[in-house]
Amino acid sequence: MPGFSSSSRVWFLGLILHTVVAHATYNGVRVLISYRTLELGGTGVVLGLMTACYSLVPLLTALFVGRLVDRGYATAVLWTGTILSVLPVALAAVAPNLGVLLVATMSLGIGQLLTTVASQALIPQSFPASALTAKFGHLTLGVSIGQTIGLPVAGMIADSTGGSPHIVGALWFMTAISALTLVAAVIVMLRGRTPHISRAEAAKDSRTPWSLLSIRGMKPAILASMTTLAAVDLMTAYLPLIGQQNGLSVTTVTWLLTLRTLASVVSRLIIGMLTRRWSNLALLWTASVLAGTCVLLIPVLTQTWTLAILLLVAGFCFGLTQPLTMTWVSTLADPANRAAVLSIRLAGNRLSQVAIPSGASLLTVFAGSGIVFTISGALLIAAGGVTWRNHHEKW
Image 1 (cartoon, rainbow, N blue to C red):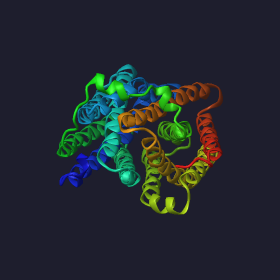
Image 2: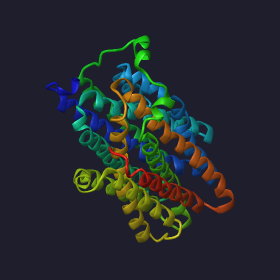
Image 3: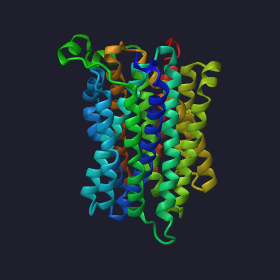
């Protein structure tokens, strides 16, 4: 495996650095895009549709990307995703209307898909099964650190003028930050190339998506991941609206979201200790139920200190779900279909990020913005119930 060469630590550190910077960009920019949408005259419905479109094209292309990675093109996919993590941020800064902003949002969503699939697939391609939980933990820790950095930086830059938020200036600043992913991608190249597999050869061992979905344990793992990612997205998109309605500044909202990501950092730091004391399924269903309860209460307990508590608990639970489900699905399939399985998991995430925000945004017309959190919280609790029902499965 390439991961056992003398440069394995260097390239893996480069991958973590890439993850940190990329997710600082994604999370900081997505909050700024929400504010930019409001600046350009968008409503709560438009916010939901913008969130859904961020995931629409990735949903349609996830399996294709996974097949490419399984054929040995992980680094090419990573490079393409890196470029699409920089240029759309600049496009969002110059967007004169909601149409152009939508194109920038969709392009950034594609960039996130490409970098995510490539980064996740490089781990099982490079390390033994016994090391996967730790390596995925490091990778998702990088995600949380990036989120922790990106959100407050974007908020502080936007509020630095002392008057109305300067969203465009903050977007240009985040463009410069995102360019650091190009440097990190060069470091990842020290891993070396994975041998390419022809399309015909890959077809011999590949399994259909339905066959992969039929693998025992795949569906509950994907459901847990889907509801968590949708909840994170809706929280990022709609907390600014809740903040506006309750007189909270951009900085306050971004720091509240930062508390969520800090809690995810903590949970990922101690996930090894937690899995030694409790089973993976017990952690999964408990995390889903607790997170769902907190999300349900967000539109009800809108004081700053109560929101801080709710986001801390939810963030801790969100941090556990992703590395657990990544390890679970990556060990269910054979090496020839491993990236495809991870891509199906991501496609499920994107499906939830398209369907749930779209439906929830339409309901805001009749029931107000709080319905978004009600739906998201209920789905998380339901996912926890499904995971609990699978407690007899052995990982």
